[in-house]
Image 1 (cartoon, rainbow, N blue to C red):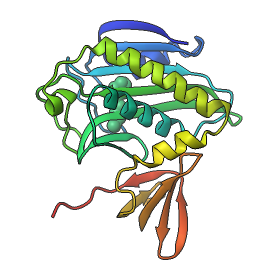
Image 2: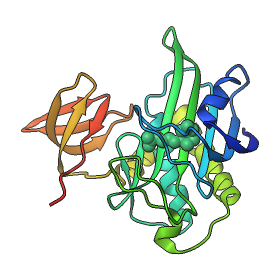
Image 3: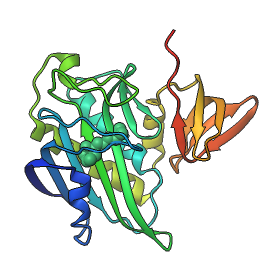
Image 4: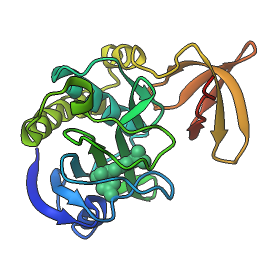
Length: 239
Ligand code: BTN
């Protein structure tokens, strides 16, 4: 499924692949470093040599609102395969090790008549860095900082793409119950009370219950279930 191109330095793999948006699904752009790596919102993404930075061009024939969760679960499953445990998916785009950020996902798409023209799935993973600039509200952490091992970036990328193909097809062909049960065992702050900043700037307090088939977050507010389609879990205050 994948055609991988490697670069030494790009501004941003997401921006670079956007210029190739007319190509068929499966193009992967990887760069050893990014000089203008982008994160969610207006954040930057620290992209020094040692991390894994790549973007995948996808062209599914229907909207896949679950894609960030499938991508996040794929990162988690892959890193666990390299001995990094205790990872959690923070809805909807981050992978955390305890309360530190090891990976982030940036999905950008163009939708026409309710159908994606293209989707760019950008992913950054902190792998071998010994020091990472802190650009987010969560302290950054790398695989090396956790295990003290050095990792071959290509081996991680190949394993991740293999896992992604499996999970993407599993979801794409039918909504897969087993995959969902697995995903729901890995939710950051599941069962805990959180504040969520919704896309219309309201703050809702509730207890995290699960992630739905469509990628929405289900929380319990008093005795009612509330479904959140887009928003952000606010950072818990350190005590
Ligand atoms: C976030 O957690 O805020 C998302 C970070 C996404 C970073 C990746 S690195 C590869 C791709 N190119 C970019 O400029 N950003 C994404």
